[in-house]
Length: 494
Image 1 (cartoon, helix red, strand yellow):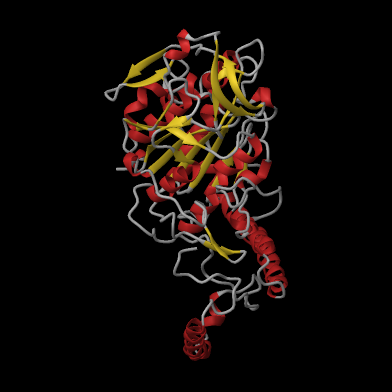
Image 2 (cartoon, helix red, strand yellow):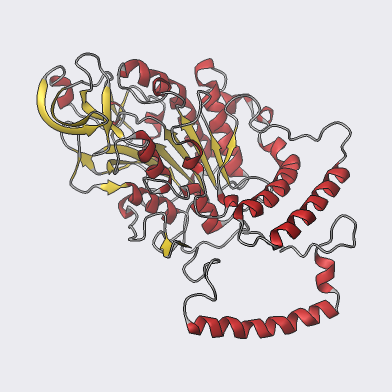
């Protein structure tokens, strides 16, 4: 919560001064309530469908839009999560020495799922790198379309994380903690609320191959109320099912049923204060009802022009599925959805970016599916004037090692010591690069940036102070960036 707010699960704050302040405020509230009740104001505010039974429900919800804590450029976030760990040294981190050392066994310290090693056989990149844009950024031939957008992108090349294991590394990238907690999308909606009460504030789109390891913990609201958790849209077919009422059920009947259900649930909740699961269930019924009138238009791709669909690659079999997700992401942020996360890769290891065996086949497949759609999104956002207020993030839970994992083959093990992420759009200075890895890409050197610095940067771009956005839990003011705090990467911010 914002620092000046009091936690819901403590009695009268934490000091005697706060107790007296709150008690004093209560006396005037009683008087005001009495006057309003005498005028009949309160009884007119919320009635059940019978027009007689008062619901006495609040007129605002925890997801109501809130003012930003600080000036911020971005209003929404689209986070491309490459599940499995894309190889930074084969995508955006050019290391010419790897070509000449290809096949040689050299001394290099690495740590991955195979444990600590002091030497390994170098695997040279399987793609060429070229310079692009006015900034002259190097991009491999894996991403010829994203390469045309480098002047809008900022590359962070000395990222590091605490774990080289998928499950815990993904939870850290999504929640800031190895064991999980509220996801970054939950923090954003908690801090800013949503400007569109008819659509979820935090949306997740999974790969058709399946969800990532650790599953729903990656978009959980953790110790926050359940209403802040991510809403998963389907990977194939209609993103949202059952938006239309069953045959014979009118909108009036639907509204009457929900009002009666709300009345019963609200009475039930009065005896169980603080039950976030129950509160979330009540709100989810209402959201589902509101989505019936709003969501069909939001997910209707037929409203887009042929040229726009081609820009995203929706007309090609290889890129159609991912392209439709990217196009839907634009439509959602256009309509006020705060946080959209799109997974590239899912299911088993061989269906993700986790290239332990055949690096080339793996990365050709995943980059081939996502390159054109992501570039199409960046270009479409820019021409619509939305890129300035939409923060785009790309990356995985870690990178990959410069050496082979096995005695033969081109596969690479996990590398959490140094890898690349990139950001573009709202609040980010395009055409920039910060940080570097050593000559082999095995570890970040010089100024290194932890996952919490990435999170701090994202929150700051949205106008949220990463060191004061907190939620009181387990005796601490919990934060996405940890109780110790973290500074954003100012060098890449406008």
